[in-house]
Length: 156
Image: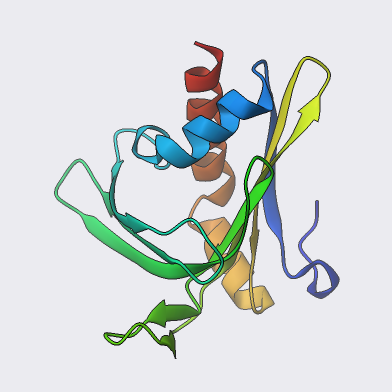
């Protein structure tokens, strides 16, 4: 799919997983540390509040000591279907929503397909430059590797 202003400057990956949606969803939400980052990177979950407005905080850690914190909120959580998060807002010390420097809106969803599950992950951006930046960072390779790691966990 070509990223355009009409589709929210969207980048996406999709894969078929030969496992039931319930199993895929469980791994997506309860075992994120096992699939969220392309190996050899790993993810440390700080907090995941699985509801609209809930905190989504983690640190991606590289093999050479690199650390990339990710702080944001869930905009939507539909159990067994999708979760949507953004880094455009964070929770203040008092729990209130605070604006943040936005990079993307992420959408991760699953749907039954035949005897398995269709997994689709999408990243939407505020403008063409940010979309290009994300693509140049290796979006397809990185998010594709994460989809493959999720697939391997669910199919095992």
